[in-house]
Length: 442
Image: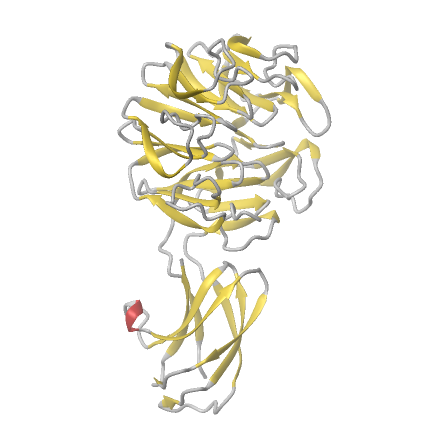
C-alpha cells in the first residue's frame, strides 16, 4: 500500500538566546541569526511590514546578533561589533533615533561599544563598555533617572561609570553597580522601587548596598538575585504589594524573568519555577489559576527563560524552544493563535510536523504503475504546527522541491485532527517503493 510520511522543511535548530516583548517573542540561533514572531502592529518584529500578528518565526537578521531585548511594542538588539539597533514603536522616543516615528526595519542607533540592553514599556536603556548607563524614551515617571520628567529621542548618559547590569520595567528602571549595589528610579505607585515608599523618583536611589548579582523588572514589580542564590521581590502581585524587598526563595536560584504580572526563575538543577497571574496559562502548569507561591513547571534541563505580558518562553539544554500562555497574536510561534496552559515545543530540533494515517484511496488500491488523475487520496493529519502544507509525491526525498509533484495544498489554522481530501490533478508514475511526503512551507 502507499506509505505517507511527515517531513519538515526546517533544518535542525539550535536556539541560544530568547527574549519576550509585550506580545512578541525574539530568539537567536547558534549562527547569530535573529528571529521574531508575534504582534507586529508597530513593526516591532523588524520584518519590513506591520502585519498584525505573525504566528511563525521569521528571520530578521542573518548573522552577528549577540543580544536581544523586547519592550511593550519595540525591540532592541546588539551586534557583535557593539552596535545597537532598534525597531518598532517610536512615538515616545524609545528607539533613540532622533524622531518620534515608528519603524518596521532595524535601524542603527549607536555604532559601537554597547554591551547590554533593556527595553521597558516605552523607554530603553543600554550600557557601554566603560560602564556608563544611557537611556531614551518616555520619562513621565522619571524612569530615565535624569532628574526630569521629559522624554528624549536620542540617547542621554545617566551614569558615567561602574554600572554592570540593567533592567527596564513598565515605567521604572533598575541597575547594578560593580560593588553589587542595586539602584532604582521611575514609577513607584506599587512600591516596585523597593525604597519603602510609593513615591516616584527621577534620580537613581540605592535600594540594596551589596551582593546583588541579577535584576529583572516587570510592569509594576521588580525581582533581584543575591550572590547566595536567594530571590527577592518588591512591588505589585495579584495578591498584595510590598514597597520593600522581601525574600521569596532562600537559595539555588540562578536566573529570573519578570513579565506583566507573572514571574519565572531557574534553579541550579535546571528546574523551571513560576508564580503570579495565570489567566492565559502563562505559568505553564496546565491551569489558568493564579498562584502566590512558586510552583515547579519543568524538573530539569532548562537553560534560559523569558516572560512577556501574558506569555512565557524557555530553552532546554538541547537547544529546543518552548512556550506557553496567550497566543492570539502569535508569540508562541507555532502557526496557530490558540493559547496554551502547558509548555509546547515551539522550535524542536528535528521531528515530523504531521502524523499521517491513511483512511482510504478512493479508486483502486492495488499496485499499478500509473495512478490515474482525479484519484482521491484521503487521510487524517494531526497537525503539530500551523501554516501551509503541501502533499508531495517523489521517489527520492533528496530531490529539489521544484522537481516534486505538488498534489494539493492546505492551510491549517487550529490544532486538531484535520481531514484532508487530496486530489491528484496529474498522473503520477507509481513504481514499487514510491512514497508520498508532507512538507511544511515556512
